[in-house]
Amino acid sequence: MPVGRSKALFDKFDEAFEPKNIQEFILKKYKQGTIDALTDSLQKVDRVSTGELSQSVDVRVFEDGGVVSFQIIMEDYWKFVDKGVDGRLKKVGSPYSFKKKNISQIAAKDFVTARGITTWKDKSGKITLDVNAPPKRLKVGQSKSITRSNKFKSLYFLAGRAIANYGVRPTHFYTDVINEDWIEGVKKDIAETIVKGFK
Image (cartoon, rainbow, N blue to C red):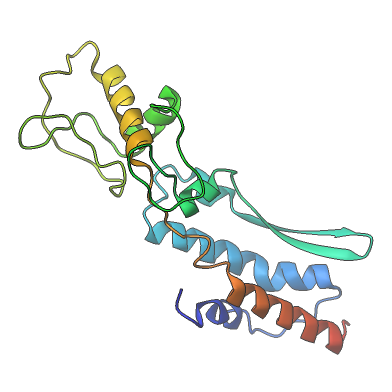
């Protein structure tokens, strides 16, 4: 990630305000900026087809025994979107990997539906699918090996097998935003504010 991107996030909230406590300080200064940065990052890597992940992004502040925690909350599968998933036949450098020859039909259906895929084939007529292509509406021909009656069942099966075999490329939508630069900036800002005191 380019140095300074996280600093730009802080600069966005330079408007003067007088928080009464550390929780209020974090919520007012970082909550919306952090949510916006992550949802913008998802948009840039074309991972908002259903909107489920971007809509789940939230920032919460917890206090336990005088210790304040600043947590970023989102759907559990964010880590697979961020770091990708190694396929059985192709590795993408992820700590996660597919073990089975296919993924669940429900997950494959979500993938196919989100990308507006109805059928696909390459120039030779062979059924193919780039599972890492950005979501888009495809206008492609009907393969002879997919009959009208079993078309969608075949689509889900083949899409699931392609995903399991070739994996999902990492997007780094999270790690390009929330990194050491960002963490150190937040810690420094909070420490300086605590020293100044609250009204």
